[in-house]
Image 1: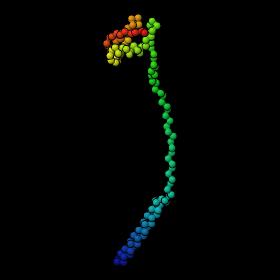
Image 2: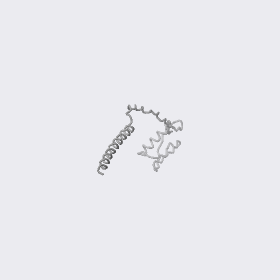
Image 3: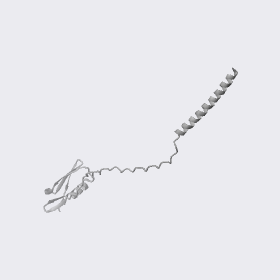
Image 4: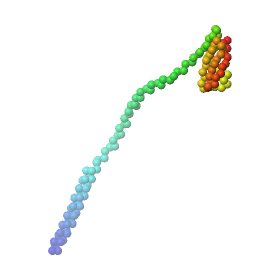
Length: 127
């Protein structure tokens, strides 16, 4: 009985050693298979240049064009500029007004006006 145990112990040790060698060999093979071969670093592709987006030209905004108007009233062969009448109305009023309505009556040489709700009159000289 004693010999059987020694033989069994020897065979178990031999089997364990063989199994360890086999496992180590398998591990080396698996590692070799798993580890890819080192490749030369790949060159990075140049970034693609994209064309800028085309933007439709903006339509010009229609703006009101202020026209300069010269307006004259003629009576008895003499002219008076409307701008001059308005300037004189503002001087008569003594201040600027937000809203001015003018009624010009050349036959009386008068200008009747309402400035910010205030009614007045002034003489207009056709010279």
